[in-house]
Image (cartoon, rainbow, N blue to C red; front, side, top):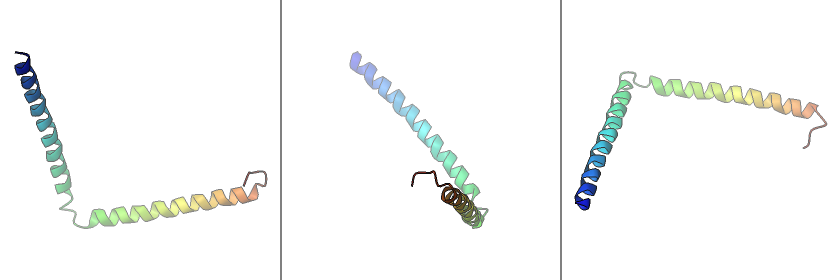
Length: 76
Protein backbone atom coordinates (compact mmCIF):
# COMPACT_ATOMS: atom_id res chain seq x y z
CA UNK A 1 0.00 0.00 0.00
CA UNK A 2 2.82 2.41 0.84
CA UNK A 3 4.64 1.73 -2.44
CA UNK A 4 1.46 2.28 -4.44
CA UNK A 5 0.93 5.65 -2.75
CA UNK A 6 4.49 6.74 -3.56
CA UNK A 7 4.07 5.88 -7.23
CA UNK A 8 0.74 7.71 -7.35
CA UNK A 9 2.39 10.77 -5.80
CA UNK A 10 5.23 10.60 -8.35
CA UNK A 11 2.80 10.36 -11.25
CA UNK A 12 0.98 13.48 -10.00
CA UNK A 13 4.28 15.38 -9.69
CA UNK A 14 5.31 14.31 -13.20
CA UNK A 15 1.98 15.50 -14.66
CA UNK A 16 2.29 18.86 -12.89
CA UNK A 17 5.90 19.31 -14.04
CA UNK A 18 4.97 18.35 -17.60
CA UNK A 19 2.18 20.94 -17.71
CA UNK A 20 4.49 23.56 -16.20
CA UNK A 21 7.35 23.04 -18.65
CA UNK A 22 5.06 22.74 -21.67
CA UNK A 23 3.49 26.03 -20.56
CA UNK A 24 6.91 27.69 -20.47
CA UNK A 25 7.69 26.27 -23.90
CA UNK A 26 4.40 27.49 -25.37
CA UNK A 27 4.92 30.98 -23.90
CA UNK A 28 8.47 31.15 -25.30
CA UNK A 29 7.26 29.96 -28.71
CA UNK A 30 4.54 32.63 -28.76
CA UNK A 31 6.91 35.38 -27.55
CA UNK A 32 9.68 34.67 -30.05
CA UNK A 33 7.24 34.32 -32.94
CA UNK A 34 6.37 37.98 -32.38
CA UNK A 35 9.88 38.87 -33.55
CA UNK A 36 9.45 37.20 -36.94
CA UNK A 37 7.27 40.07 -38.11
CA UNK A 38 9.88 42.65 -37.12
CA UNK A 39 12.60 41.10 -39.27
CA UNK A 40 16.03 42.53 -38.44
CA UNK A 41 14.71 45.52 -36.49
CA UNK A 42 15.24 44.04 -32.97
CA UNK A 43 18.89 43.31 -33.82
CA UNK A 44 19.48 46.85 -35.03
CA UNK A 45 17.69 48.35 -32.00
CA UNK A 46 19.69 46.21 -29.56
CA UNK A 47 22.97 47.15 -31.27
CA UNK A 48 22.17 50.87 -31.23
CA UNK A 49 21.11 50.72 -27.59
CA UNK A 50 24.33 48.90 -26.72
CA UNK A 51 26.47 51.58 -28.35
CA UNK A 52 24.52 54.41 -26.71
CA UNK A 53 24.96 52.81 -23.28
CA UNK A 54 28.65 52.11 -24.00
CA UNK A 55 29.39 55.75 -24.81
CA UNK A 56 27.35 56.94 -21.82
CA UNK A 57 29.38 54.65 -19.55
CA UNK A 58 32.66 55.85 -21.11
CA UNK A 59 31.61 59.47 -20.49
CA UNK A 60 30.86 58.68 -16.84
CA UNK A 61 34.19 56.88 -16.47
CA UNK A 62 36.05 59.88 -17.93
CA UNK A 63 34.32 62.15 -15.40
CA UNK A 64 35.30 59.81 -12.55
CA UNK A 65 38.90 59.69 -13.75
CA UNK A 66 39.09 63.48 -14.04
CA UNK A 67 37.65 63.85 -10.54
CA UNK A 68 40.15 61.35 -9.16
CA UNK A 69 43.07 63.11 -10.86
CA UNK A 70 41.99 66.47 -9.41
CA UNK A 71 41.76 65.12 -5.85
CA UNK A 72 45.27 64.53 -4.46
CA UNK A 73 44.03 63.19 -1.12
CA UNK A 74 42.79 59.94 -2.66
CA UNK A 75 44.69 56.71 -2.30
CA UNK A 76 46.19 55.57 -5.58
